[in-house]
Amino acid sequence: MEPEAAIRVAEVFRSLQGEGPSLGTPSTFVRLQGCTVGCAWCDTKYSWPPGGGTAMAWQALLDQVAAGRAQHIHNVVVTGGEPLEHPDLSRLVHALKRLGLRIEVETSGVAGPDPATAAAVDQWNVSLKLRHSGVPAARRLDPRAIDSFRGIGGDRVYWKFVVAEAEHVQEVADLVQRFDLPRGRVLLMSLTLDRGGSAAEQRRVDELVWRACVERGYRYTPRAHAAIFGLRRGV
Image (cartoon, rainbow, N blue to C red; front, top):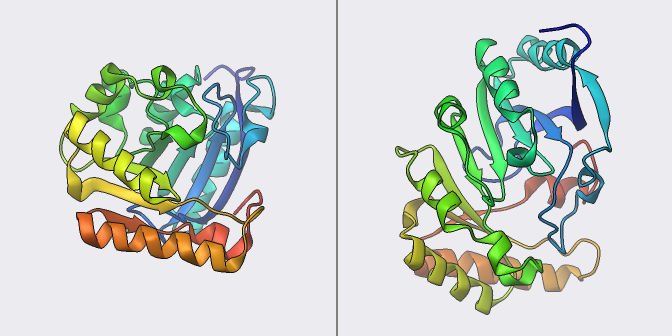
């Protein structure tokens, strides 16, 4: 890669994957900068401005990620922001693949990946947004994008929904039916109330989500990092 090239990132850090099907996996996180989705309850709003973050030299980024292998960390989580809006996502995925690393991408599913990127990513964590995100339906639910993820096949795509009320669970059920999502790869995650709700209220939400998964055959995922550290960066 040309030495002057840079990629804009919000942060790079090592931690455990705190949610989803890879929960507990030691991982290097590459949070790309830039997102226009605009979820009301997003806890990484610092990653929204496309010109924010840091313009990081490509080789410096790859060296930092590769250094994780000395700690036996072979999983990379590419997140954001919204990675599929980032102009360098495809280039990053293929560069990480050449390092022999396993790649997860966290996305809101508002856009689909190109075929080469889709094939190179080991796991897609697609978090479709519900009405309570405050994002207009035409923006958060793109049938063509959803179909592109459904077309990837195998067990490489998981569908994650953030819920807090019974009506949110019903909305998920409607989307599962509408888009024929595989029930065994649908995950429900409690909305974290760290900044506005009591511990009792959080327990109520967690129990609602837990019971909904049992009743409907979905998978439950906590947000372990938020529960342990609260909503802060670098965890």
